[in-house]
Image (tube, rainbow, N blue to C red):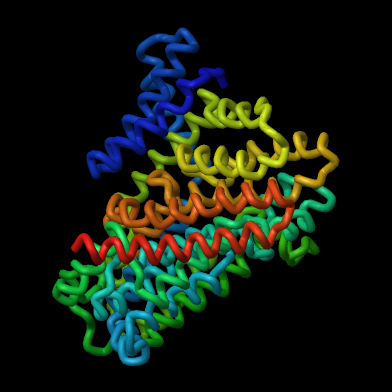
Length: 496
């Protein structure tokens, strides 16, 4: 890795700015990766050809590093396509439409599902998006709102769930002995996760939308009802269409995903469950997705819901449909690799934190802001807290340790902000994929909501650092957030 100073933050800024301006994410990410390679080659004094050699090396490396993720997504999307073609999704949409009588009930059910599926954020986005999408379409609720709710209950829930791959990752970064206990103590200080859940609940119950999300909701209410049946060219079989055709494959997928994570991590060989599920969670999820595929085969083929040929064609079609978001993921992984491993983006930003001369009571506030900017620009929460936690631990050790837990909570909160709403975050990409919402539309409608929460969190950390009272910061943040939502909603009504 080469230290490139200020230039190290240009590639993610270029990619994000281009994506928001042009509304086209593929070329924006590619240009971001290319600009990072140019910076690296210039500082390393290498040849022009090395730009492209390094770029494709990075892409190949990230594909290899994330091979289980690719397998999991391919298998999961095959299952999703199969349940769509079986008619189970259509039947579930009709049933849920009868039981969930209002948009409020539908949004609340989505939020509760997001909280219940807390093991992995990407799994959360794809599973809930698939299950709830037909209901949203029938009730004329925008897919942008669906994408926001599942995204807002993905990373923010995982980062405060004691039993998740995230908890293990954070605990391992903090300490090998009491890291898990320290992680538990940071949960009340993770204002972003807590306030995001509060905002989702508040908007779900009140319907106080603003900005481009409000416009998306208005457009959805005027649009014709969309029937989401998977491949529009594929006729739903007459013998299919039962709710169990959707529910059982998904349930088996969830059960075996949890068992798979435990198995891969050595739980059945004596490793504690909380550690086992964090060892290689995506490998375990792949086992769960395959179990869902086997369940679909056992359910559909004997009952002749699908013929063997149709079954295989659905698998191929499902894998093909995940290729566009997979390209986005590969490019975003490559951009993150360039920033972290080649041009030192994380080191440049975290070095600023270490060298600051501001008063110590401002540390939670400052670290939150830096972590938020860092995670948004790199699109990774794990990479952000992986670089910042050691620095924060060293800084706080010199102060007697009193600021350690609040500052670690601020670090995790800022890191989750980027994972939640950055255009190049894999969770953001998977949320738009699960909701079948255009990626840039999801980003545009979600960023104002997420950033409003982040601003209120910054105020909360400022108050916590100044007063030393946790509940003072939480109360102030909640009151300000509530007032802001009401004022923004009122302003929208006056301008329309």
